[in-house]
Amino acid sequence: MHASNPPRVLLGLTGGIAAYKAAELCRMLIKHGADVRVVMTAAAARFITPVTMQALSGQAVASDLWDRAIDNAMGHIELSRDRDLIVVAPASADFMAKVAHGFADDLLSTLCLARECPLFLAPAMNRQMWENPATQRSVELLRGDGVTLLGPASGDQACGEVGQGRMLEPEELASHVMAALGPKLLSGVQMLITAGPTFEAIDPVRGITNRSSGRMGYAVAQAALEAGAEVTLVSGPTSLAPPAGARVVPVISAQEMLEAVNAHVGAAQIFVSVAAVADYRVRAASERKIKKSEQALTLELEPTVDILQAVSTRPSPPFCVGFAAESHDLEKFAQEKRARKKLPLLAANIAQDAIGAEDNSLILFDDAGRHPLPRGPKLQQARALVRHIATLYGSRS
Image (cartoon, rainbow, N blue to C red; front, top):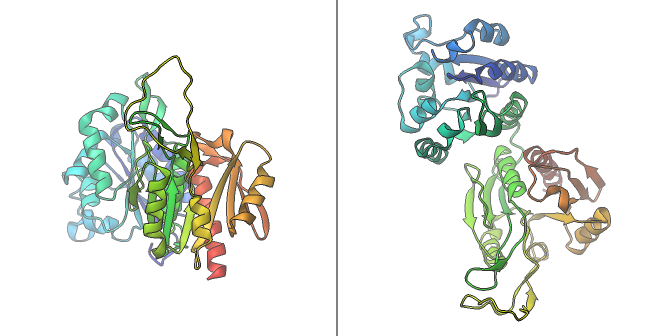
């Protein structure tokens, strides 16, 4: 972000009924202290007028690639050069395809191609359009190019259908944007994060696992990246798209996760163990599928290595952060775990309230005591956690 204050945002609007939400997004960004400049496509102006966006932003709305009022008639360059971030909301399927393939036939698409700042897109479209293979190819290209996609969400759509493709609400979009524009509290810090479940084989087709979705670990990785950290994410099997900018190391079993952590922990200054690692594995997994029979099946289990404790008890450990998911007596077990593993910080929650859910409620435990966080989306919780980590790490450093 530029040294100047306030943070400077270019808000782009493309054609779609969700354009009405951009008015509230603009208002909320300004309320958060941002300077907002608006650029609209011709299709966007069919849904909401430039006059509305001008009144809300307090600045003239740009839409014409050939506007002679702009210095040197180079609006596609000048309009974004002093911006810290571009967010396009709504971003239509057509616009996403343009950016993914480098087409630039109007002011907004040209601005995105000529930018020097991060680009966020908030997709908004009918569910069939979102699920169409062509759109998904655009999504993969955009993510590969470092473009951040915010959403879409699932829910009721203007067409009367229900499904994926709904634009995120203005409050959530504003939160993402302002977080990205926030201070880089962990700039240059190497962070190693584990996420997701592990899968312990019984035979070639069966295994022991748990209900962890990986969302919290991936949210911590996203928050750490926003804070300027260099992130290595060791992930068990999940269906989540990894945060853009993270180095991802996929694993399956607890042993594979241990080996991946050991391979990368030497370079890490902070280690955050979020993964729900299996406590036990089958002592002798069958190389062939076990056939069903009327007889009872007995499996002999052996404990896996405690990855967090193995890291925290190293001769020169990184700053270690643990997670505890308990079904009862949360504070008692969390404090015992923190002491036993010699952790400067531990985040705890009730397992049945958090596993698989999209929101969470955490209590942070450190040498100063307990710090409860209000329930909210996991990314919001992760950002608060990362701020706390940065404070403790900075004081120790």
